[in-house]
Image (cartoon, rainbow, N blue to C red; front, side, top):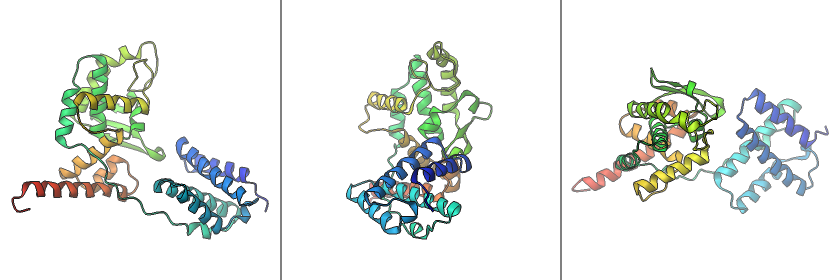
Length: 299
C-alpha cells in the first residue's frame, strides 16, 4: 500500500475534528506534532507509512529528550503518534502494536501554586474602585476565583451563558464538553455591577455578546486577562507572580481545605479524570503540614 503522508494526515485531521469533536486548538496541536514527526522520518529516509517501525518512534523520542523538550511536550507528541497509528490500523490495517508500547515519561511532580486566603483578601481590597475599568477587573477576578474556570472559558463566556436567577454559568470546556458551574454572592454582585454600569460604555460601537471586553470594546483575549491580573497584583503590592490558572488552583485548594469532596471539585473544574484533580490533595496536605509545624508547640 502506497499511502502518502499528506493524505493520511488530512484524513486523520478530518477524523479528530468531525468524529472526535476535538477543538480547533487540539487539532492544530496534533497537526504540528505529526508534521514534526514526518519531517524526522524523512531524515531517516522513510518514504512510506508502511515502512515506519517502532525504532523510528523511539529514535524520535530520544531526539526530543536531547533537545531538552519538556516532559509534558514529549508526552503530548507520544499521544499524537499513538493516536495517528491507531487510526491507520483501523482504516488501513497498518500494524500499530509497536506504537502502543511507547511509554509516557513520568510527570514532574510540581505542586500548583495558589493564593492563601490573606493574600487573596489583600488582592481584592487593593483593587476596589468605581470606575468602569475597575468594575470590569473586579468582575474578572471574582468570577475566576468563584468558579475556577480556565481563562479560555472566561474569554469565550457570553451574556446568555449567565443565569443570575440560579447564580450559575454555562461553560464550554476542553473537548467542547459543556458543564454548569455555580458562583457566589460576591461574584454575582460584581458581575451585575459590571454588566449594568460598565460593559455598555466599554463596548462603544461594537456589537457582540461576549461578557468581558477590552478598553477598545472588543472581546477580551487570554493575553489581556494576564495583563489585567499582573496590574492587579502590582496594585496590591503582593510579592508574587500571577497567572490565570493560579486562581483555578486557588479555587480547588480552598474548596478542599474547607471540606469539599474530590468528586465535586473534579466536576466543577471539568476534569475528565480524577487523577487530574488529585494533585490538589497533595497541596492541601502540605498546607496542613505547614500549619501544624508552625502552630504546634512540640512540632
